[in-house]
View 1 (cartoon, rainbow, N blue to C red):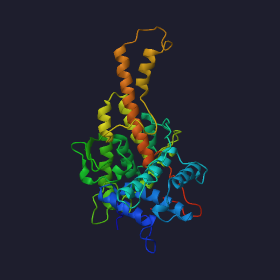
View 2 (view 1 turned 30 degrees about the vertical axis):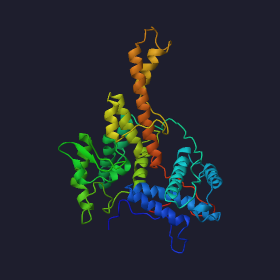
View 3 (view 1 turned 180 degrees about the vertical axis):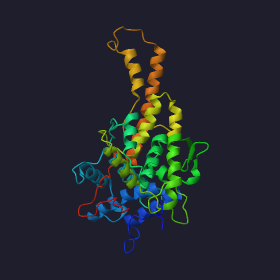
View 4 (view 1 turned 45 degrees about the horizontal axis):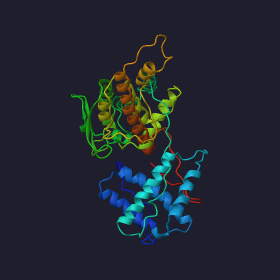
Length: 383
């Protein structure tokens, strides 16, 4: 039997629990998200947040929404700040921010539905998200090194090469690749249709000839022997004919990066960054890259900034008095144009970075989830 791509999730078993307890209301909120059209993947991630919070509250005897006050939420915020995973690493401020904003949304929902008299999370001071440089973007030669470590003599190697070539060629998101169907690919026109990407928006993007040649080889030599009838129509399958797991996909890409021995760690999102960066450095207009990535709006308040070094060099050479042996008078119009381009590129890569961490795919490692003392680790799922 083929696994469902986005199984419907439940927060906690509510049988025997109070009908007006936290778990019951959280399940109700998750269902309201479905009614509003949010993806099951988004709901699944919210489920992890709520399960962690519910377990933390249960340990402290907090069973009902009316038990939660602003001081209680501030205690939970401190819990997130001091939490350490098994290897001793803390939660990033971006992860803490994601947890707390999800909880804010839950209590805002309770307030709008008149389930609580006042919203204890309305005035919660959220952490400021750090701004960091990316862990790494691949050069053209490094991409080739990664692709060449795949053993294409094996059937799984052919599929894996087709997957990485697709990531490199299109820069699509991890979940967008997992959801690709056969009819989304137009080999003759060299296009790929992304259906219901982030924000449930469709877009059509080009895909390169090399990626198409590997996909064609996979479709002809590999996929037919893996299909389980009735054929689901999903493009990339496991050897058992099932959907790919997001965590497995991240782990697979991360292992190839490590095996290539290029000194850089990452996962699926690294190819998304790489595609955007190489196109920028090749002279592509930022608007076309934005369309490729499926960014309707660039977010200037996101995680960190990555800019094209060529534009930075233009401003440096034009403005720094010691940059050249012979000083030339700078062109004000050129400087202004370069500055505007830099700002736009910064917004683009800030958006990419925040996206990577929100999807849990920024470094290729499965993150530890905070848990209540004596409770099970939150967010733990079995493939």
